[in-house]
Length: 193
Image 1: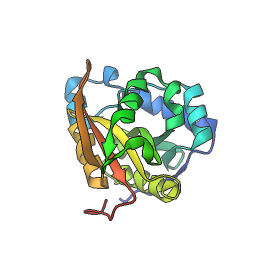
Image 2: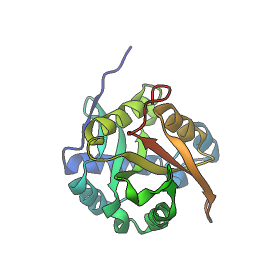
Image 3: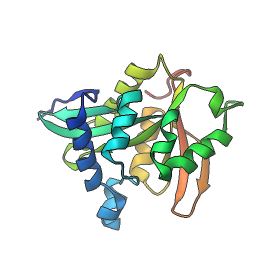
Image 4: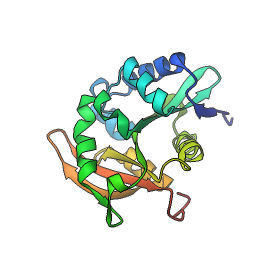
């Protein structure tokens, strides 16, 4: 049975609250190591105030199956760097990186603040649909999306590669080894990305 989903920009506070519920269910501290390895995980926990401020700058994308939230992909413009102190080092790192021979900050980009699909809806193509909606809504305003993915989160690494993200930098911090990945909307699509 094929499921149908509504994928669109966040419409208000109730959807932001749904995001927080799904996020909590998938935080790495809530999952076993076996579950993290098989299903992936999210690392950062947001609060409603931060999501509302992010939404005011550029709405995030959500997928619904009926009334249930099936997934989300958080839009985090550079102006949001101070909203999540745990992410400031990521933004600071991006300030030092070059991409295609130019500093990151020469480009119009935003950060994928986090992407998560509810377990009951994985394997339905929602990851790609969420990112395609980002591209549809934001490619006129931005050159690319950048984010960090835990290298050990193989499910997420593979999914980002399928969409069209390419690794532009890797590093290790006190918590993990990370890949900085970019989905460049100014370049021709590769393998469907």
